[in-house]
Length: 169
Figure 1 (cartoon, rainbow, N blue to C red):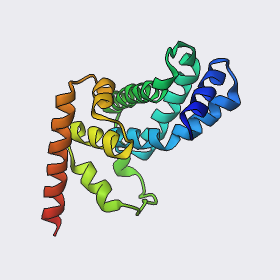
Figure 2 (tube, rainbow, N blue to C red):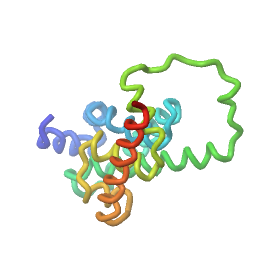
Figure 3 (tube, rainbow, N blue to C red):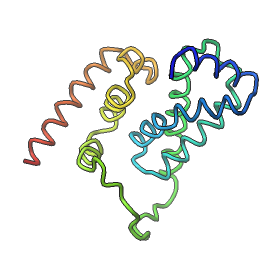
Figure 4 (tube, helix red, strand yellow):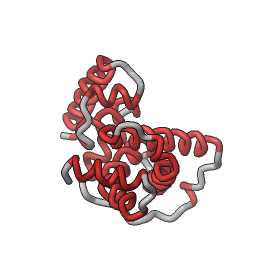
């Protein structure tokens, strides 16, 4: 979708038009889910984080000052929600061991396993950069870290992934 169309949808959403907001969220849903999954490593928690982020976005969209930063703004909200869910999960008892196995997505399973093996600080940067197409500068703003740290984490993440796949051979 073209940026002008997105900006038009944002303006309509700021006027509380639900159809425009729904279209905006539909455009962002896949990217949001990937980011949430990279942080939480759990489908259900990722879906909860996306849902919470959408609700906050609807409630606070009037505070968005510059429509061209909508995607960054929404991703920042999502990241905060993911960390909230993770903090909450740390305070609760894990019943996962008692659950029956559920259907597992077999697409790119090896890549998902490799990403899961990465420490979170590398995984989130890799997903934002390669999966979502953010630039290093944008990732630095989202995560509130220096650009050089983003670039270092990207490099180390690539090295760790290469080592992971080299060991698998």
